[in-house]
Length: 208
Image (cartoon, rainbow, N blue to C red; front, side):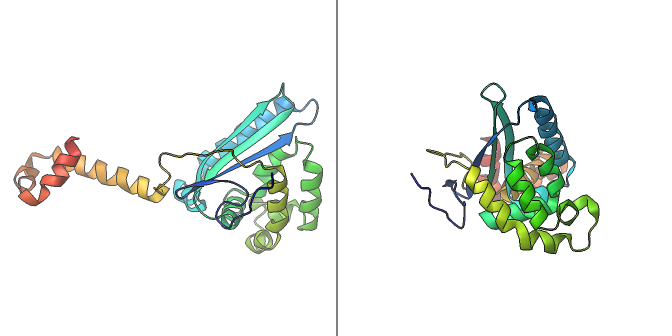
């Protein structure tokens, strides 16, 4: 069955504002442990990023699963922006060098490497190179990368996300408001203000 390509999700499915991407790769023989280590480095690099910048890319989650006795790799991620800017912003925020770190251990790397060379080489796509044309290079060349990813992608048969209606900025804002309100509730000086009838719905929500 041919999957429909959409502006929002590319080849994936969407629930609310969230879209899924599941791409399957073949692991080079003898590269399983190197691949696992590279996947861990990739996640650690994401943890080092400014959370605000990571959220700005639209990223909800990402995971790498090595399966089939070390012969296959699943890269699964969900995002809440549109497909094109998600891929662009992921490369701009993280740098392609951190994607290449794990991708080089797959047989699909030969095709990816040809794309890298066509795009001007690793320096043109690596954030760490401090190339002044880095952003321009990425935005001009990611069409090739998107096609490679979609060729490796399989659309989910079904997809559900319980927080699909909410964006990450909304979730973070709700957490911040809740923390601030709990601080007010713990302040004895706020007792009189909180007794106002207009705040009754808010207090009821806080108590639930």
